[in-house]
Each structure stands twice: as structure tokens, then as C-alpha cells.
Amino acid sequence: MTFKTIIEPFRVHSVEPLVMTTPEQRREAIGRAGNNLFSLRAEDVLIDFLTDSGTGAMSRDQWAAIQRGDESYAGSPSWFRFLESVQDLFPFEHVIPTHQGRAAEKILFTAIGGEGKIVPNNTHFDTTRANVEYTGARAVDLVIAEGRDPASRHPFKGNMDLDALESLLIEHGREAVPVVFMTITNNSGGGQPVSLENLRGVREVCDRYGIPFFLDACRFAENAWFIREREAGQGDRDVRDIVREVASLADGMTMSAKKDPLGNIGGWLAMNDDGLADECRTLLILTEGFPTYGGLAGRDLEALAQGLRESVQHDYLRYRIRSTAYLGDALTAAGVPVVQPIGGHAVYLDAGALLPHIDPLDYPGQALAIALYEAGGIRGCEIGSVMFGLQPDGSERPAAMELVRLAIPRRTYTQSHIDYVIEVAISVAERADQLRGYRITSEPRPLRHFTATFEQQTG
Ligand SMILES: *Cc1c(COP(=O)(O)O)cnc(C)c1O
Image 1 (tube, rainbow, N blue to C red):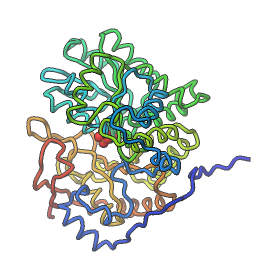
Image 2 (tube, protein in one colour):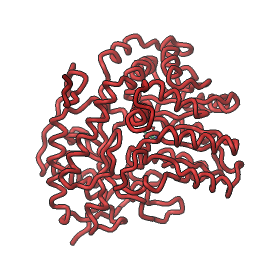
Image 3 (cartoon, rainbow, N blue to C red):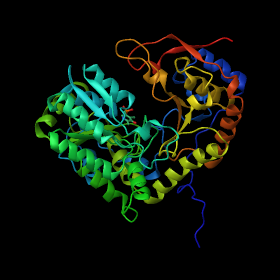
Image 4 (spheres, rainbow, N blue to C red):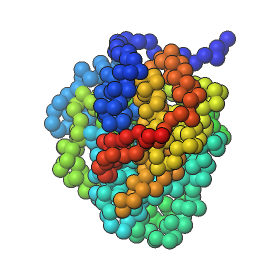
């Protein structure tokens, strides 16, 4: 007999207390934070869905591995265990450890970016875009049309528009395009997966134009699970085989090990090109460290080596994807607009649809995120015109979608926490017409969303 409830495939081994607060205390806290959720003290948050980055719970076996951490400056056994674990899934010639994903991006785009260059991606993640643009290059998003439609139920909404990619290459020529990137899953586009077929298509286009193909592979395991679940002929495969096939289609990758690899810190850059690897290692030594530790301690490398092995276990991935869908399905059933189908690591509330009375440049996503915090102590993240509206020339333009991301930390919250979130979100949605927009009172650039301050509009 099989039962339909998919339970957490672990039990609790060590606990962290949550601090209960009242709505009055939360209103005061968000006011002190300039209405920016990034500026809150984490203790003032009850359920922290700001990000799934580095916020997961490590396993008993990861903590045990940490005890084996060898802190030799060069050639540590911890480095070799990390390398073996990475190359088991991503058999690239060169693996360059970094302290997190953006360090890998910074190094790669310093080497291959620059004025006049164009980098296509299905959708650039915010730090990826910032690192491309910082070199003077242009970051272009070419996700399929369904990927921009929050209501479309396409099974692989992260796919690249192959015709648009080819047009871009014809228009600008191969010299202008140092690399084609694919983000799996497509984080900024709703945590939506990319199909194996589409990845093969991108490979084929890149081959025809002689352009390297890189993966932003932060959520490779979740993406592989979706391929297994949704793509014809993949249902019987081991996730590790799917991951290896995905890797075999690319020439290199960037990784934030704070996502699927189940680490609290870490990342890497990997590639097959010897010359590029030499250049990247030189840059690595300038800012990160020696090539056998990057920005990481030996114990971090151990935690990641073990985390990578756990990240591709089927029981874990089945629970992971199901528990995210559980939140999204409950909100959908209650009539709260969320991006469909539910992504891997997060549920994206469609603030544009829920708050049509707030103009995109009055930041409906920010308004909804603050309302969720005030009502229930839930911290989400605006992914809309606050994050993407500011253009490199200083002008402002509405983002493609106005979303609030509820990112689910891995193995951290239980079903009763999620039931509470569902109750709070429904109560906020019921009085959506009372929410008001915000205006920005101070902002840095780029990446203004991390530290900007806001003021609620009157009236
Ligand atoms: C998190 C993330 C990054 C950046 O990684 P950090 O470790 O936060 O620097 C890059 N791309 C994607 C898709 C991400 O989710």
C-alpha cells in the first residue's frame, strides 16, 4: 500500500527557536528598516522566505564532514573530496572554487565581458546581470514568451527562445557574444525549469556559431527532477544521470553552492577551456584565494562535498518539489494569484494581478511584501520594478512582472509553518484593495533593492 502524503524525509535533530512578535512590533520594525525587508533584523522575522540561498538546514552527515575539514592552504584532502563530488555530477576539466556564485560571475565576466559585448541568457539573475553590466557588456533575456506570462502552464517556462537567440547572433555576430548562458531553474522567471530538449537546442545553436555555452546551475537538481517528472522518456532515469547529461551539453558553469548543493556558503566556476581557466585562476588569486580553496575553508568544502551527494537523492527531491507545490496549490485554490506552474524553490505571488490599483512604478510587489510581514512576520522578496526597474542610464521602466517571491529554505520549515503562511497570505489577499504603493526615498545603484529606503504613499 502506498500513501499519498509525502512526508519530510528527515526528523529534527537540533532546533532553533522562533521569536513571536505582534503586528505593532512588526510595523515598528519595518519602519526602522526604511520599509526595506533586507534591512530587518532576522530575529524580527517569524518565517523567513527572503531567500533559499544559504538558509537551508545541513544534515547530520554534513556536520560530521565539517569535523574532517582540513585547513591546509594548498592541496587539502578536503579540496580533493570537494572536487571529486563536483566532477561526479559536472565532469568539467577545471573547477575553480569561490566563496559564492557572484564571485564566480565576477571572475568569468571580468575575463570575457567588456564594452560592446552581449550576453544572452534565458533570464539573468540580478547579480549575474549586474556583473555583466559592470564590465560594460549588455545582458539580454531571451526566455520563451510563456515564461513572461504568469498564468501560462507550459511545463518548461524557463526555456530559451531559440529563434530569438539565433536572431541575436545573426544581428550582432559571434564576436560580440562571448558566451550564451542558461539559468537552471530560471530563478528570476519564477523558478521555472528548462527542458533537456531546449538545452540540446541551445547547444546546437552555439555549435553552429562557435560560441561557448555556460550554465548558471544553482538549482540543477530541482531542474533535473522536473525533467524526470515532465519530459517525455525521462521518468525512469536517475537524477544523477540527467544532471550529467545536462552538464555534458555545456562548456562550463557558474554555481552558487548556497542553493541546491545544500551549503550555507560556497560556489564555483567550472569549464573545459584551458586558456580561460588560467585567466580565471589568476583573477581568483587576486580576490578569492588559492585555487584549491577559493574563498572557502576546508570545512566548507567538506560540507559541500556531502551536500552535493544529498542534493540528488530522489526521496529528498520528491519532498522538496512537493512541499513547494503544497504552498502554491493551496494559495491557488484560495484564489491568490501565483505564477503557474509552481516552481522548484519558491512560490511567486503575482502582485501585479493582486494589486491592479497600484502602478508598477509605485511598486506593488514591495507593497505586498511589506503587508505579509506586518500581518504575519513573513519575509518575502520583491522581484519586480524595485529589483529590475532601474536602467543602466538611470531611467526607470516597469519590470516584465511584479512578483513577490516566497523562497523556501531547504529542509528548514515544517508543514505547520507552511499552513500558517497560507492563512496569512489569504488574509492579506482578502484586503488587497486597501494596500497602497510606495516611493523610493534613497537608493544606491546597481542592485538598489538591497539597501533602498521606501515611504508609503498617502491617500
Ligand atoms: C543565487 C544565485 C546567483 C548568485 O549566487 P550567490 O551565491 O548569491 O552569489 C546566481 N544565479 C542564480 C540563478 C542564483 O539563484
